Structures are given as C-alpha cells and as structure tokens.
Length: 214
Image 1 (cartoon, one colour):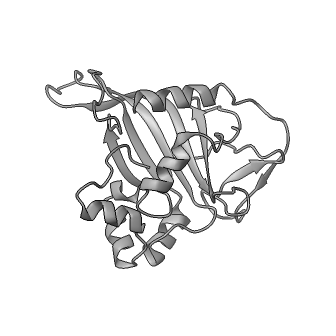
Image 2 (image 1 turned 90 degrees about the horizontal axis):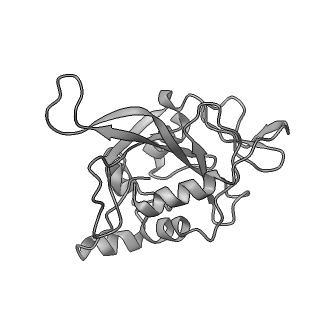
C-alpha cells in the first residue's frame, strides 16, 4: 500500500461511525455479496467475503516511481462477489451492484521454517470496498473504507474529490477497475472487447500504468 493510500484509509476511517438505522439492500436480497446500505446511505461491511472469488494479491505495489523503503510492505488481497464474477465471465464487464473487496494485511519474513521471501501475517489492517450502483453514484462506482475490526460499523462513501476516482477512471482496464492486475479476468475482457481504449492505447505504447490491484 502506498503512503498516500495509508493516509487516505486513515482519514476515511476517521469518518466512519455507528448507525442504528435499519439497513436496506441495494441488490437482490438473496444474492450473496450484494451491497447493503443503511437508510441514510452508509455501506455495511461486506460479510464473509473470504467465501467469495479470490482475484489477486499484491505485495507493496505502488504508483509512486520511487516506491517504498519499507522492509515489510503490506499485502493486499482482492475478492469479488460470486454473482458479479460469474457475470464478468459471461460479458467481460461488471454488472450493477458489483462489490469488490480489497483487504490489507501485514507481511513478515521470519516465521516457522521460512528463510526467504514474504508471507502474510496478522489480522486485517483495513478494508477498501468498491461498489457499483449506477443509480446511487454519479460516476457509477463508490469507494468505502473500513477498519480491520470484524465489528466495524457502517461507513460513509469516500468523497468523489478523492484521487482514487480519477485514477481508476483514467487507468482502469475495465469499467474503472484495475482488471489489468487480475490475471484470470484480463483475457476474458480482451475476448469480449470491453477493455478501456485509453488503457489499450497506453499498453500499446508500452506505458500501461502499474500500481496496486483493484
């Protein structure tokens, strides 16, 4: 996670608060992984996303050309709601009410019998959630941040002025998402011709953006 991302998550987590308002489902009530919002528009933490479809992991990926000097860069793991994943395989793009979850965990080099390389260690540090809802969000997608606490409360949307929105719009391979970092889905998108033309142009020039997954 870049230093900027850490600061963004920290600032957003500060805005998260509890709510006693009954929740309403934005997607079909019987769909596993559908986003669930409170009556005042906060997103409830996705439940049991470990049972969703795993898309990718990264270790200390960064948009910054100078990278990070951390000896223990964080891992991130990305999961997609099952129904959204199945639709992507059929169409090459994400359906409405898609939920993508990116969790961050610490890394370690020493432990058990390991002598080289990194492995994931410790509890979830934070969670970023990307939700597609074309009626709720002006841009079609909204970002939310949660603490790693299993009892995390509902979160308010990260403001549209945050750079994550413009970055995803400019560099996302498919529908403002970083499918270029999902090795099992990029070929699907190419087969369905749903790749962002701007990304294809950058890739052709050998300047396809690199950075964090999601």
